[in-house]
Image (cartoon, rainbow, N blue to C red; front, side, top):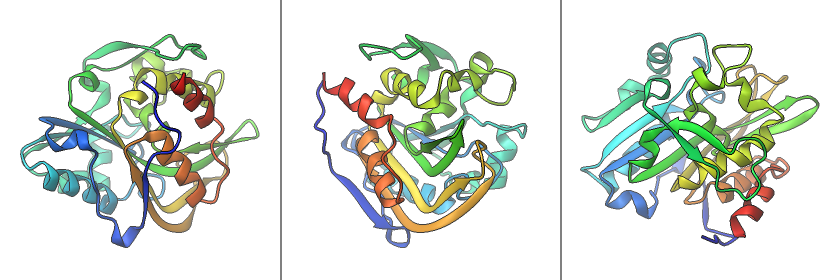
Length: 262
């Protein structure tokens, strides 16, 4: 279904951030939130508990009875439970919220809707994505460098944590190395074509922009930006995050948008 190239996106100072959920959340029985919390390191490597807390609070206020599933797959030697405890996620949960390790969930194979997949005609991801009523990605804003090229990570790249390491590991069992070949920008087109198009909302924590010293997304420096960007469309939110974060628009966004408008 064609989507307008320009859709509403909200930019707000971090201190004033109050989350307005997408329409799909209002009457949803089950909402899936995918936060960027894959490392045992706090912001800006991962999203802040303040931003995640506001997202959960906004969802709960909009829909008091929904079951809210917070789903992440870590990318570290440290265990899922230890990372979530260290970052403080458990303190945010109410009785209607569950924290789930994506690597332990039942999987299904998602077909790639793109007319021209770049590598993967299908990708395996949690079955849960097709059974919940609303899906929201909450990403950190990060720039890494790989083979001399910059890579922007925001709400779309955040979805990498939903893919099982057991299927997509390469040299390291703790990461998803197969999803870096031939390149992350190319594979991100397949990510959108398989599961990204299912997401109803996106939030990017741009309180600090994380700049990696190399390819590693957990070693680097933070630069204060002081903004949170959110809306109902992953591509539009990520494009606006690039502008707010004072970076060139991520080159993978336009090819995805072009495919989507066909």
